Length: 294
Length: 136
Image (cartoon, rainbow over all chains, first blue to last red; front, side, top):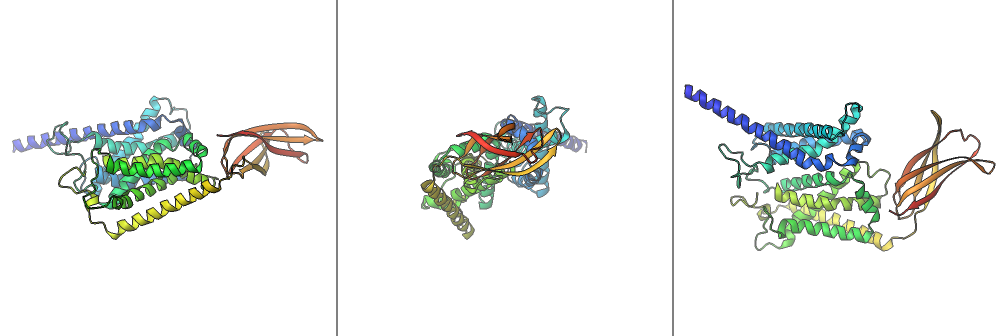
């Protein structure tokens, strides 16, 4: 009996250590993926200028997104929605804490600021940081299985085996990838400045380049995780079923992010289209990369 | 991960009608967009920016008088650093002037701004006009 108790203790201890390790990786991910945005001046300003309803909408939409992401790549090998919900909450919490801590460290948040400014700045940064926390756990880690030692994680990524066999999941991952890269660049003034400088011919080239890069990223260049098109299936099957919907998703996410940041207010349709095309370029790369990495 | 041998990539799945439908709708959207941009490219005019300003509101504020206005750019070219000057005229002489600079007034779009005067323009003639811009 005593032996069993000791084994249970050891087991609980190992569970606890694994959990703390997971938290550490999540925090590292939040930092790694969040730093570019934490050091972007326009995002600090957006913290207090952003329309509060749009901020709220993005904060709320982030919850189901994290839950689904947790279900696909989560902190632990999630099997139930409760576990996914728990992981999503942890990631969101880590995102908030890490963003606030780093902004305090950098002097972006100060005690004498109005509360609404502090909240706004932290909230807007918490979105990319929480995605980063989720990715950090799944990408920096790799020893979820009992008894695994760190370092041998070649085939036990925190990715369930049935991953990426489902069409909707694939589209969802593309949306997350596009959102993540969009959040990096959308707040900067460069996006609208570029769209003002580009002629329609430039944007036509940008559309074609985005789509071509997206397709090549996944199918031509042999990255780890490259998707194989089985023999006998023409290339345009995958192009039509994955690349084009992926590009449309990247565009939709771009419109949403630009709208959230107030870049589309009082702007003519053509200009909206131009800045969307500009933002879809990094978005398309993010979407393609997500299919490979996640 | 598709590199796992026990795990077929989604490309190998037997695609259902929903995948083809999504693909076709997406292709339609992309083609429509390309058509629109091509049309824009072919018909784009290179007229320089043209502004029209309409005063939308005048009100007393602490320490002065605020005049709110919309500035619209009707051409297909975006203007940056647009300087707008407001003047209160008193019998042909400028009695007071105030200036504001817009970072951008995008093509075929509007921007909103305000200028402050220290006195009430009242019945006096007021002029709000753009005085310069740069190309982005």
